[in-house]
Image (tube, rainbow, N blue to C red):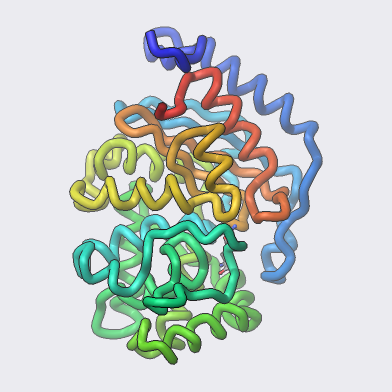
Length: 318
Ligand code: DON
């Protein structure tokens, strides 16, 4: 009864039309070989570009999946969403807002730019803002801070999580651009902890290993007011869900965020690994994984699949 309603429904009694649609999307877009894998982190350049998976998890715990959904990869920028939630829990919204803004940049994810007036990084979804966010994670030292971060991911995913040490060390030894941003923010008093410790934690959170099904469960947890729909564990305080989803909606796809909001119309976040999560509040979480990226760092197949899912399932929020 809404103008944008799609012609396909998620029907747990008869899931076969949705399953068939996911299969069809997978075989159609598998043929799309456009894009390139990320090369600036040497370990990431080794990924198989043909990997491709799609997973949907509903808020009542139904799972629909196709392709290489068990294949592990590092979460990269998708971690920024969840680290932001932890920073909000640690300090509350008012304080976090003094350190990281909520304004889209229109720039690339790795732009070395701070807000002219406030000297804050623009938002927690770009690298500068994510480093500032991670610097806010509480803990008495690097191990406790890492353990709190890993435990947070465990609640969203529903199992213990691990850091890919090769990807972590690869980024730590080449991530000079991120280091430069951290120094710039230190100069303006925007981060006040030991910056090497915070950068390590940021590189570690980016190197957390997930698969496509994990992404969909994490997205579904955000769709379900912070409760993991499979384990029923509260992963994040529900009062922060609206803040997390708002910033995903306006900033999650970097300098494609406006077009994404216009066309696809749901909060989402991409990562240089080739993953995308998309959240349909009170309905479902979507995870897509395909490492071939466009020039903005978004998965080519991932964007296409989300566009089709949004149309056919009528997911656009407006
Ligand atoms: O800091 C970086 O550059 C990476 N660890 C994450 C960047 C990323 O995933 C951007 N996504 N498109």
